[in-house]
Image (spheres, rainbow, N blue to C red):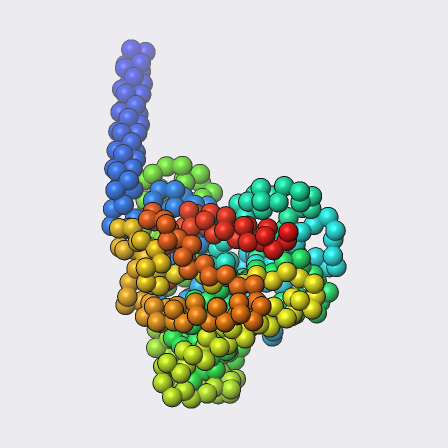
Length: 427
């Protein structure tokens, strides 16, 4: 082959490569543009771009609460002899040795640090992403405060009273101390006992879905079912880490692909959870599962008992804090099913309000009673505050799912209001 033919052949190869790369670049650009448009219009219920990016980076929990029982808890939580359950430290490096997404609690009182413990359920556990805002708000509200402000998130996903009492008592018994204890709860205390415990003959005060938790140690069927959920969550997490590690959160097309993939895995997890609950329904109960279960005359009597247990939990926290020189503040968390507590946006009505959700009718019925029960706590001297109206003047989207959780805007509002009351209590 002569030099001219060689040159022409090389030129042809380069042209083909350039054409190929050009076509590939055009395809990628087209995918980016289409994905950008789909994300911008919220196609097929797709969350906002920033929300997907935050979930992919692990800054948010990818929550889907389509079924009661919360299957993820089975794989990320472990049994605890005093708390009921705690977060598996081996599942996340951000978990401390007691099973919380928090720094190690202090031993003894440090005069240079203001240690604030915040307790509750998943609403509070997810609030850890906004704790920096709470610190900043507190610093603004207390300009004379020289101590370092340190937040200890002692919340459990699915936690409810009396777990908060048990957690604080245990940590104090280990020699730890706090300056302030904040308890933001209410929703779990009136929904989980009636939706997950009572129908299966389990004591209302036992941890959520205890019929599942109590069987993990010895039931081979439970081991199989939980293992299936574990596998799904691990595979789902691996895909998230791959997309994040490859730097793909900066592009629209990969964000959309990951969101659809993650949604598919969530559906498979929901199916596995449904199978698990169905399999559990026919199994014989034991005292380890049921505890001191009580037969209630009707649903109203059971709800009244659950609210009394909520009150008793707060009373005991107040007494425990008082005995240890700790400021205690109790807040009733907001919820979208409490009538007229927030003007719901069109987006919230679509994705964060579903009266067929098992907890919705319970919350709607219970919240007026919780508000009244809170007034009784105030009359007894408990530093209780009703936060059910905290979003009343906010028509923008705040609720993130059909359960009770809020987005970044909601957490910022909670941080601002919590800081106001904490600062007032410390003056």
